[in-house]
Image 1 (cartoon, one colour):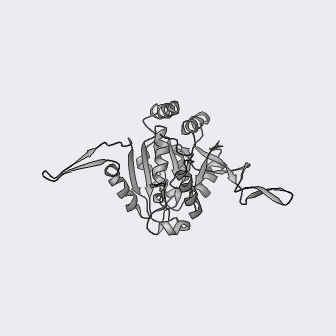
Image 2 (tube, helix red, strand yellow; image 1 turned 90 degrees about the vertical axis):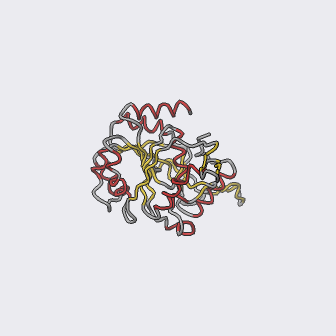
Image 3 (cartoon, helix red, strand yellow; image 1 turned 180 degrees about the vertical axis):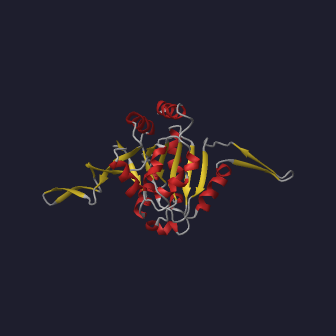
Length: 274
């Protein structure tokens, strides 16, 4: 994977510096009310870390370390996490005679993180638009703060560069709504829960976007998925990068349990970092 990280970083820096990564982290997460009464959805924990941390680790593995987090609901929780992150990840030596605090054995990621409050009621497109002054006139990446995957981000970026359109999203096979049993006689020998159907594809997030995409966002009430992507597709400016590997959103309490189980049993396929 080391080659992938170098490739991604080179593709970014060759065109005006490291690519910024936008994470949409402002929704209410109403279907996770058990957790999100106190936390914004991206701060719900998987394996003792917020899912937001897992997403940053995925991008960082490929050399993307410059993040803009578009917050809304309970943005102060996300700000506090990053304010305290260095201390949390370090051993600390307190010298009460001098009043000093020394960090020991610090192993910290080379992240640059902007935590931007984009409003409590702003829709997804509006959140991206509000980051315009931070994005400049450069290609950027974008994903949601509630899903993980083992997407090869180097290959995704290379694919985007190859076609010259304004937007690329990662397409994943649509999970079936129902489980499918394998039956011999009257005996069920296998029950596949939510099998995928590779004839049908849905958006798994993990976008690469050109600054021209911002022209497809009108205001705070623009829904990026239902409005901006539709217009981009109508104009022939939207391409799909097909991902056949692991992808898992965190939409329900059942998803939270599944992700935590995968992590605790060393089956977390999105953990591509060492």
